[in-house]
Length: 373
Length: 251
Figure 1 (cartoon, rainbow over the protein chains, first blue to last red):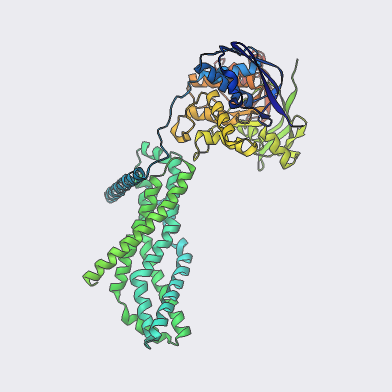
Figure 2: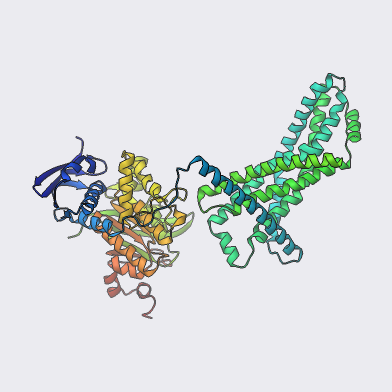
């Protein structure tokens, strides 16, 4: 049998007598205020009878507090006498607190123009924070040089390990494959001119000037940049960063400096490693599919690249390393105070880093081209 | 007249690995009680609570909810028991990515078949009961610690539970808000007819609302006293309990 809560209304002129009966609980079916609102015209007093009420919970309270509200607005007396004493007390408790204490002005239905406007001002605000964070980092390095910055040496070595040796396997795999891809793409084109040997130039230049630094940076953005953002973000959630600040420790010195320095030191090394493995990947394809001997490939590579090209790649890797650590730490420090904010910070760190890497790479490539480096 | 036993703990031993925290715990929480678990810091009060709300299984012994042996029951039976319990955590444990209204609606969405409007009505009722009307769209990070506690309470009573568990409900609140919290607990116990189990070491709360209690001791690792707090203070001969209940001033 279905449990049911029923209500009967008896209208004695100016007085409405409501009889509740049956089961008025969340699991039963019962009427709502809308269903009975029509009884409430031309009355000055509401009274209740609950002698046939079997069970009640918040379901009954919801309808009663609606009735109470209605009575208050329309100047109808509300006589709670006939209700169970628990219900009476809860109704008193519910009506004791002010109806609308605070209403948030957060308007979720923005118009298109409003959205454009708020996004733009957010973008301006965000670029300002970029600059201010860069400034803070510069100041922090100043303190490091004058010996005033404090961070834990053990922290620094953990980050060195994290940014260097721990990333080697994935960097190796990706660079070999990038070398293979470059060689394949080149082989098909160069074969048409009988210039297969220039594979070595393509792969050598491609890896040292561009792809080595770029691939290492993108891997580090996904791996380490995201981790930095999540670490700092959860410290922000736990108020650890506030605690550092009140203890007189600059969070930039203590948290950002070791992370940034570790990545700056390790990125050129990872890039060199990536260059080397990329070139071997290229040789793998040249040797297997084009019958180029190892000495031929070696000589061609040595002739095509020189220290200048390595220099370009290493310079880029420093810039990229800075951008990855910068985005990770910035998004971590900006993190909000909730669990989902940490996730957003990590995602945003990766996206920011990759955008900055590609944009800065394009700019640098153009500049180097103009300068003839 | 003594009311019915609701939770019966028999020979409970709590341990982390081989480290025994408390052993041979025996007590009964009766219907309508406000049952206080007290003791000094680190004696296992909160761990005992975790055992009672199904977060940690006992090393030995049983916990019965009415006739059901909680830890021997099936997953489904346990979940049914847990639906009749409301829990207020020490740090409120509101989900930070959801508004107060969404937090309170969560158990209702999960365990009832109510429609969107009905859930909305219930949520605003619960918020009004704890004095947070109008704060439905705020996130936990935007309100004060005392308000978070009350929002946590609103979530705990969302399903009209039979048993309410509180872990340090007045910790971190100013004396006036702590007092209001006590009044709110009493009011909810009387009007909802719920049974309340509280872990606390706020003396004011213990005497103001406690109807029965146990005192856990960290050294002997078991219950060294129990009973209604006022009677306990008057009759105890145990120096430790007396010291605790008088804030050390009787020595």
